[in-house]
Image: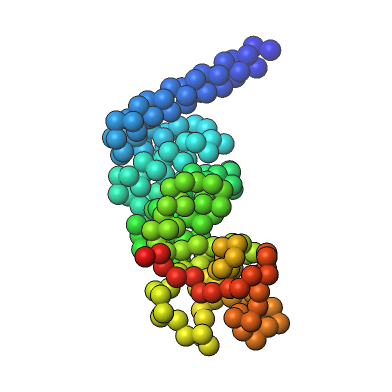
Length: 198
């Protein structure tokens, strides 16, 4: 019985220490002392392997410190713990974008936007992307008048002129020869190539 209560006290002490470390790291984060905050969140994450918050704040701190490559691992670990965490998808997309890995970044930005993250939706508009409402793949807008109606990339979206829904060419085609002959999958309206907003 004595050993069990000592272990219980030790575990409680570890949890309390982890919380205190996390709170100190949050204070450093609020002061924009990114590297110091990252050190604190790393320590808290080691003490609490199941904490998605520790990993999110560690990744964001590293990103804000310009340590983008280092930020990837804790952000991915956060998503392993909480696959539908919009903040983590957005943060991972931002870090990947800083590394110039735009295709991967777009996947996470789109996922975050689908989950309702407002910054991700703004980033999508700024980058000229949207996503297919069927398969959720990122789609790019084109410059007005720069597309060939016979050759549309699977990465360029088609948008309904009636309901504004967006679809990728592979989802639209199915057995059809051309995405230009297919009606909107939602309302039956006419589809056009997505163009960049002016």
